[in-house]
Image (cartoon, rainbow, N blue to C red; front, top):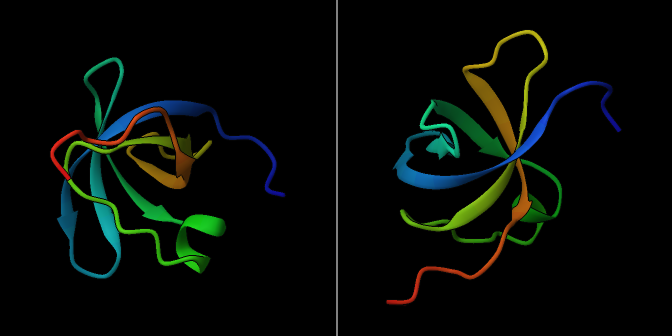
Length: 77
C-alpha cells in the first residue's frame, strides 16, 4: 500500500480520455483522478453523479486515485 495521501469522498463530474475522471471533493475543489485497485480490476463503470472515495496525492493535491465507491449510486440508472 502506498504511504501518505488523504482519503476523501467526492462526486464524479465527468469522464475524460485515458481512464481519467474529473471529481469534485466535499469542499468544492475539483481534482483529476484515475481508478486503481478493485475499481480498475473489476471494470467498474463510473458515471457523472457517482460518489467515490478518492485518495489525494501527498505531493500534488490536484491529482488523486479513485480507490472505491462510496454511498448510494446515482438514482437514475
